[in-house]
Image (cartoon, rainbow, N blue to C red; front, top):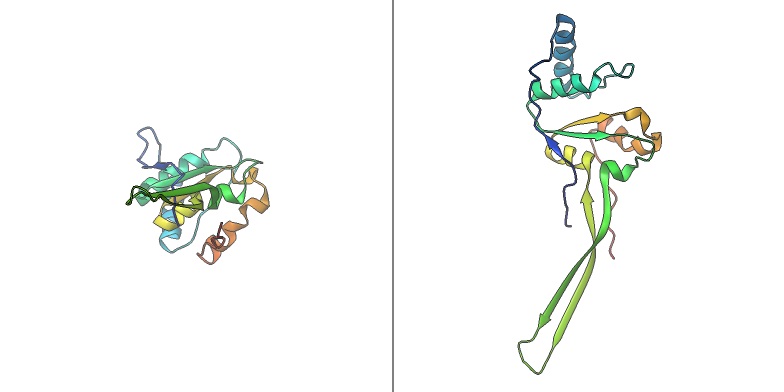
Length: 159
């Protein structure tokens, strides 16, 4: 199966102008402890309260690359997991004997990993910004990832 990575990886660094008050430090320490214990974290609150900035700050403490996704009403499960995008064509021309031409072609579907699959596969930190803007059915795949720590991918289909 051929895969192609479609996610942009970020290398989180502490922000130079990030003010870590005692309150924020307690939240960050608690978040890091939850992650170390194997639990996902979810920051919620009103728009504009810097939840994404806080998530990036926590990610910088973890020292792992970040895959960031932005939800919206058109977001689908394949935007998280991946899917079959296009085909791969393989063509072999055998002209060993100049009077005999042998041609062989093979066309297969291509599976391309997407953000969630890449984060799970390589152990990256996933930041899902604007999670609530996505349709609930698009996020169903997250249930097994967050609860059972398992990503169920569709079986490869023959072309």
